[in-house]
Each structure stands twice: as structure tokens, then as C-alpha cells.
Image (cartoon, rainbow, N blue to C red; front, side, top):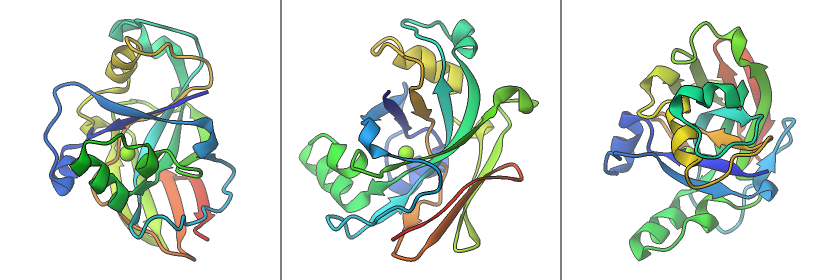
Length: 203
Ligand code: MG
């Protein structure tokens, strides 16, 4: 399986990082070795002094497809989850400055927190899903899928021009504003509507 992460999909987050507004989805990949599931702890890596959380809605692909049209994209996924795209912000800044690839900042071991998944039929409207992240009991990020620049269906259509999507692939759909640093012994809990999707410790 592969993980496809959309960057720069919420305007206020683009502004907080000082990036340009994209005209097409921007994305990068994480390897399967980046995944943490079942609320296992995240071990703070030694190579970063500015390790940041980015809470994001997830989509799990359940059918193989290439050149998927936006109109049919909804038939390629049936489950929604929540995750964290952990980012070594200090390394990412250096990568951007030097024009280097982002993998050391984004695709390291443990950088993809993946929750349980919920059937999409449980949501009245996929373009109106509320989610939030709590750090040590305090809400630090709040998002609504309706604020995404590029919808789930648009993302699937765009990405599948370049990569064949396969069953089990996961798409991280981008983070809203409010990203911030984690430290050892922090507790992170993610929610979709009033459903707790994950809760784990930083070690
Ligand atoms: Mg992200």
C-alpha cells in the first residue's frame, strides 16, 4: 500500500505557512513503514527539533483504478478515517530552501498516524464533516471538509493520472490551520464529529 498526502488544501493553513495558493492539488507520498495504527505511541525522532502535528481526514481506496474521472471517484472509496501527517518542520524548511525532496521531513518511520475507519454512508454530507485535534485535552486544530480547496473526488481524479490507485491505499487530504509542535509525554486525541478516532502518547 501507499500513502498519498495532499499539501496546501486549506486556505488558512496555506497562509500560516506563507505558501502560495495552488491551482492543482500538491501531493507527496509516504511509505508503508511510516504507518502507526491502533493508538500505539509515537516516538519523537532525534533528528528534528520542531516535530509538528497536522490532523487530516483520511480516505481508504478499495478498488484499483487509473485515470479515474471525478464523476466516478466516489465509487473507489467507502470509508473515512482520521490521521496525523507528522512533519519535521525544521527539516522541511531546509528542504524547501534547498529545493530538495521532502521525504526526510515527511515520510520517516511513524510519520503517518492512521485511525480506525468509518463507513462513508454514516455521514449525511461528505462535504460537511467536522473534525478536530486535542493536545493534552485542549483543542488545537478544527476543520471541516467543506473548506478543502480540492474535494476528495477531485483529489482522486487528479492523483490517479500519475499513480494507479490500489486497494488499501490511503489518502491524507490536507490539514486545517493550527499546526504545532509536540513534546515527549504529550497526549494527542483526534475526533470526527463527536466520535473519538484515535488517542495516543508521544514518547
Ligand atoms: Mg499534511
